[in-house]
Image (tube, rainbow, N blue to C red; front, side, top):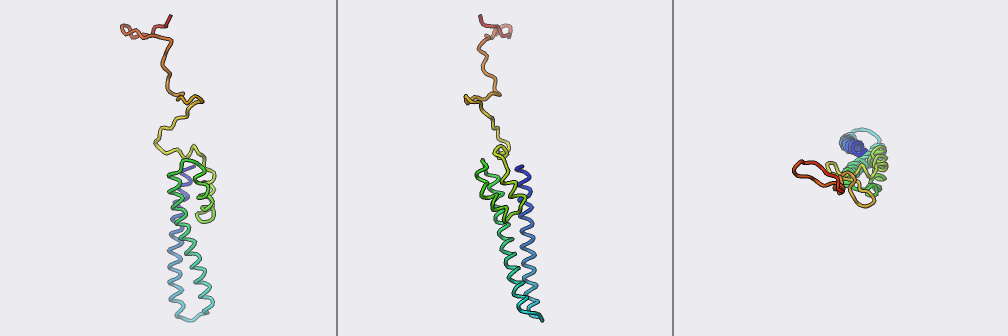
Length: 146
């Protein structure tokens, strides 16, 4: 689930950048269109709408980028709660839901040798020393203790 969240956060960043680019182009087009004939009220409303779109696109890029950084560094689900909620509003619905639904076991760093310990704090995957047998060095066999 961590990889899926990363993919959707990257998609949100790319789409936010695309929205930012289109907003700037639209604002430049309005500036050149303003010199020609047309209603000044319509141009003003369009410029306000494009400005809001630019602010939202910039927020999408910032929130999604910070969420991606936090996702890479997070070790528990609690660390991602705020970023998941922010992603719901600014980064996209899917990455926000994935960040909120991620499990603690998915946040274990890749390549780490995490081992679950039993209630005594021992690693159950490691064999305990054999105390019922002695080792005979001549034959290389284990001999049961008397």
